[in-house]
Length: 168
Image (cartoon, rainbow, N blue to C red; front, top):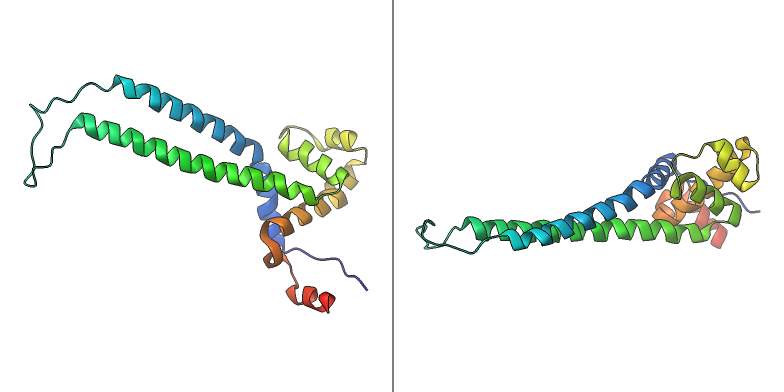
């Protein structure tokens, strides 16, 4: 006898929040890329180094405003690139998780979370071809549970021992 796998409520919540953040995350990548371009364009505005007014420390290390600014910009660009990599990883992970869904589930998730955050459930139900109640309830729940399991694996299950019993 096959039992339905149940996902812990917190993982349903995590997954729903991740789906809601998909579009803003994609936009943040675009904005960080623009920030990097701006920082790279500003590199040309740094003037040459003049050591006349720079003080030497006891270690004879030169502390130059120009060099410090250049290093700060490089550090900022590196940090933005790391954030872009992390955001892109989460975007790709979300897109990859959709592959476990049936077509109607995928249509619902894409319409509600990934293509627009402004569609009402009535609009989504029209696109998917089911009632609002079915879309908001069973279809959405089924899709989010499958995505949660894809994201978090066995940790998301309410009864992990159930899986072991089914395998035997």
